[in-house]
Each structure stands twice: as C-alpha cells, then as structure tokens.
Length: 503
Image (cartoon, one colour):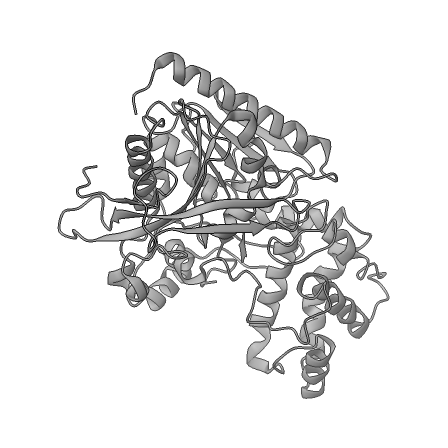
C-alpha cells in the first residue's frame, strides 16, 4: 500500500563533520555548472494552470554521516525557487523529501508555492537519498543489502541538515534566513524529526499527515483500516458492507475455472487470474480502497491517479446494492466498476494490471527496505470494525519475510528509541496537521502537546490536503488550517530574528 508518499506494508509479510563539501547549481547564486544544473518547469493539473519554475541542483553529500570508514560521496538532488525570496534574510521553506522522485513532491506541494510571496521565502525541495536521482552508489545502490545499508531516516536527516547549513553559508543573503521544514506523510515525519534532532538548523516544522506514532505499542494496529472503512461508510449506502461481502464473493466465484475466467473478464485484467493469484488480487483491491481513502479530495486530482471530485462517493454509486439480495456476480460487477474509477477514470486504460498500483514516482523497493529495518508500522484488520478480511499483525512473520527479501531483520522499537515515541513534549515549534478522512491520521498527533507542539485537525481533509494548492472546491476547514500554519510560520520567523540565530 502506498500513497504520497507512503509505501506501507498492508500485510504482515511484505507487502557531523563533513569534509570537501561542494554545491552545484548556483546559476542563481554562485557556481554555474552546465553539467549539474538544469531548469525545470512543471504544471500541476490541480493548480488551475499554475506553472512553477525551479532550478535543479546537486550537492555532494557524505554517504555515511555517522562513521568514518566509508568516505565516499554522492550527488543529492534538490530544487530551488527564489522568485519571491527577500535576499536580506528572508525565510527558507525547506521540503524534506519523501520516498520518491522529488519533482513529484515539488509539483504536488502547492501550499509552499502559494505562500512564498507573502513570506518572501526561498523554496527548496530536497530529495531523499536512494530515491529519484539521489543514489549513493549509482546503479548499484539497490544491488544488495551492503549497498542499501545507508538508507535510513537518520542519514536522510543528516543530509538535510548539512545541505541547509551549506546553503546558508554559500548563498549570499541567506546567512540569517530562518529555515522552516515542511513535509507530508513520511516527509512530514522527517520534517518533525528534523526539528527535534537539529533545532539549531530549522526554527520550526510543519508535519502534514505524519504518522510518527504508527509504530509498535503506540497506537492500535487496527485503527488505520477503521478509518478507511469509515470513509466508505459515510460516502454511500451499503458501500462498506458490500466491500466487506466482496471477499467471500471472490472465493465463491473463483472456486471454479469458469468463475476465474469470468472474474478476469469482468475486471478486464491484463493477465487472466490463476488460483495462485487470488491473494495478490485481493491485496490489489485492498490497496485500491486504501489509496482512494488517502486521495479523497474535494476536486479532480491526479496525485496518485486521475480521479473525480470526492472519488469515494463516485465509487460508492457502483456499490449501493441491498446486501441481503445482491448476487455474487452482481456484487463483483459493481466492484469492478468501482475499481475502474481509480484505475481508469480517463477511459484510456485498455486493461487493468493487478501488479501495478499507479504510483510509479514512489520507490517501492527502497521503502520496503526501510519498513524492514526501522520503519516498522503495524497494521491489522478484524473484518468486523473494518471492511477487510481478518489479518493479524504478526511481527515474527514480518521479520522472517524481511530476512528472506533483504537478509535483515527489523528493529521494532528503534523509532521509539531514536525519536522519542509518544514523549515529545520537550520539543517546540512543530505543527502536526491531519485530515479526518486520512487513514494515516491513526498514527498522527491529533492533540496539542504543548503551546508550541500543536495539532491542526481538518475533519474533511484527506492525505495532506493542506499541502496542496488552494482550490475553489477546498472546504473551509483546510483554508482555515493553512491560515493557521502561515501565522505560526510568521511567529517562528519573528522569534528567530529576535534571537539572531547564527547561520
């Protein structure tokens, strides 16, 4: 299961001193290099034809910030826009990149572009190591576990910290610029942790849809899928009930070869189903419903897939059967139409590929490795309080699968150890925003921890809706959330200037 940006495991089995730093790009600021700089311009289809422009830059990062044996470097990609930046110490809004191509997140984080002029801010979007073009060992980065060893959140946070400090040293006018970290989903977790671990580098953080508590023994493992189910229940009569019934209907119909053939044809699958494919087919459907919950936006959007306004409401129009009388064939016919809302809203897809989740800008393998090491996020279902087949969280089975895939075993308690778990009251200047429709809010901070570690809840918001561009269909709750976030930014900037924090 994945989202922007999360790739998560939906089943228990997989599913500092730095020397010789170099900054490349600086056609805007300093050292121009044609080889390592290029212009970028992208249009977000949800931004009312807003065109954004940025420079693509590269920075020499240490492969290992915490040891001394591996002394190599790699080129970390980052994107810069200084169109509205006040060069006399204007703030820097720094996006902490997720598990994917940074241009995708840049294009889908319209909030930063919308507020840049008001704040006089420079925008920086930093790519996470091992994703996009920021590959520590080039094409060998994913070749084996030895090369993957430096893919950790701690190393990524150190990358961000080193990059920020070097930007402030080398960019004329940035020495006194307060830096605010911004991120969504895993990127939101990183923005919060960057403020926690490096408060000397960033003056505050906006952590949108950041499930920093979705770890063992912090929140119930079933809450995630309860929220998914609630989204469908509120979007159409019998919608969640019929999805709950569909799993048994699949079993009934695929008991025969003719039924398998019928189901393959009904879903227009690119490859006919075999008996051995049924678990994967069900997992594909489960992921579809989860992805829809995460991107249940109030307007047409193409974040994971091109989708209509309030896509779950559209899905549920195909599933409003009377559960007591609908046949298995009729029910699965509705399920197939519902799946097409997600995978073929444009009508351009000739067949549905169950091995594809249409989130190619995210890094499957990299996140699976992170989930198998330190990002252990238990998820489970019971089939009663949610609309899915019962599935316990089995850490040992998960660990065994990780060992089989990568030769590593996860450290279930490491995130709590290194980032403080539930005990975050000693920190400051962090906003945790969560949408009531977003299943990841189950592991998010949804209450104020202190006067400066605060929660903003957007009842009708899906996954980090507040980080997207302003849109005429936005509910007032997200407009209010963005206003509050900017007011906190201005407060932090004022505080930082009064303290005259050195760069």
